[in-house]
Length: 608
Ligand code: M6R
Image (cartoon, rainbow, N blue to C red):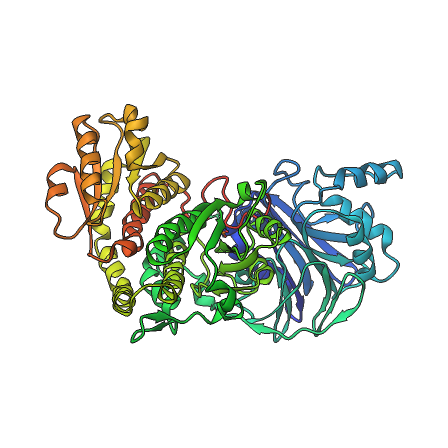
């Protein structure tokens, strides 16, 4: 979705802004632009397409200014054209603004302004903000922004400059992320830490309805009532290397190969081997109630939702808690009747997914307790939940989520173990589970060492236009996640199904042109999966089976097999998903897709 990056300091702003925009490319966008201020002169340049188009438009212009705002736009109101790209300005070209989010009452504001004679030059909702700020401006940009904020409904992260106030950027947020970076040689603001981590790791998080005035040597934060706020800077864990490809052709592949470390990072300092009990400091503020809770609802979207689906089986096995999993965009519209002491777990890599945020806000209204499992420290979900657990997985840049899925499964398993040990799980079982979890990083590494084999399988099948993924119990959400991975980056149509459902419909599709990926490790569903594979083979459907090392029965019937090491049944998803990720990756590579930035998708979906 849209991205914001701003700089004000002692260096030329343009290269810093362009570098920041490139770091935001992974979020998905269709046009970009910047406004750089040098005294009362403002260079305002926009372009449709990739950042390279903006660079071409800038080529030959000597942009000297040391403060500026820049934006990548993902069209919501109005087509991706140059005149709809941000920054937008008022009629006189005094105010320049970039905006993430949606102004819900823009139409009524626009009509009001048009009646006063204001001429609009774009179809965007954002442009109303530029005109309102210009109208309210009486020498104090912060005040003009503050008054504008009181007029608008919807969500926004904005950054604004004014021709009369060089060296000053005003930023504000409501519902959309906006982080301020405290630099040595100037200050920054961005919608995403990755845009500025090359320059600073010291950040200040803005709360909803706050605004800030940023200059080269100062940052002042204010409430919507203009009250000054004091806030300490936090240090982000991410490094500049985290946002580099490090020799990999794509971030997705880099992140798949990082997964052994992702598991280690999710477990680091969080297990007591001797007692077989995880230690999760982040949930201690609610522990007294959580340990008594018997009903949990996990709300999430996309890949995070599928991790929640796996967790429901794990909780069922290890604890006495009933777990429901809800797609966040549906949850919000349900009539909710929670038993007392129900906990909602919002799970999100970005911590900014609009549907998940809306779901927890609705749950809070209904009196539920809120936990978060998020990767981005300081993100909206982490701030709007009572307590939670961070993934500590570093930035995930590839639009297709991979390492975070594995991290979420690791953390949810630790949480289930912690609660299970508090319920009736034995010491022996707890110790056995933690021992098996500690082997997972090396086991994932072992699967990754077979990537050439998986690549060869992808080469054999990548031209097939329709795929089926089948699994049972723990394997069912992996089938859905495998299908999602394949469709989102290769654009091959794929469906994930509970294998038992095959005979209730999808079996009609089976023919020699439709490959099936069967998630068939040696767990309690193994025999049933063999039956499904037989049914497919009798109809001449090609089968790629993901099996446990040493399996001989499936090897005889499947066309291709990918072996994974043995583990406990509830830990298999952490292993079975890896071949699915690699299959999707290599199919997309053979099809020459834009793997890290698949069409129409955005990394962080900040609109409902
Ligand atoms: O940041 P979140 O985990 O809340 O994102 C949820 C989904 O948008 C995300 O998992 C999406 O489905 C990915 N493209 C999947 O690869």
